Amino acid sequence: MAEVLSVEVSSFFQEPVKTKGAVVFSGGDSVEVGGPVFSAEGIRATRLTPIDFDMRTEPYLVEIPARADLSSHFFTHKGEEIGYLLSGHLELKIEEKTYRANPGDIICLTTQIPSGWVNPEPDRARLLWFKVK
Image (cartoon, rainbow, N blue to C red; front, side, top):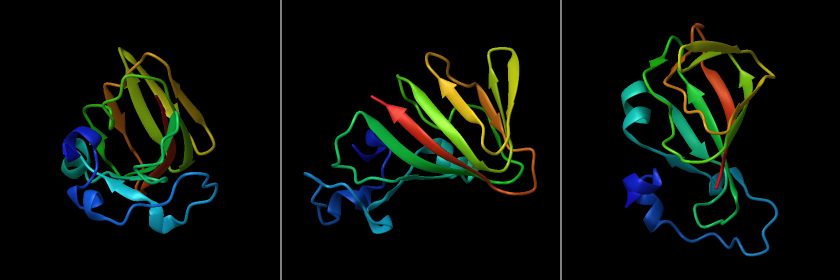
């Protein structure tokens, strides 16, 4: 079940967060997500709202290590996704075309799924990423 939800098994054993009517969450409410691509490539992804907070949009902070070269998209998700590059530079490949994103750029995926990501820089890239259900 943890693998399907892309969360750590320990998240099932945490105290539930009172999400009904909540407007502000602390950083302690966030949950690090996992999966094969994350551990293999050293990517860190943190869901910024609790797992039991049900919204149409899921916010994440995604960190891609320096010089990382991913051979697939970091999420397996059927739906729209949008990201804001906070720092670093990234290249993403969709079909035969490569796109470069710089800090402050927005990445919008509607039906496309990147076939690869590259962080060509010597520093970690940080993305604010949203999955839309």
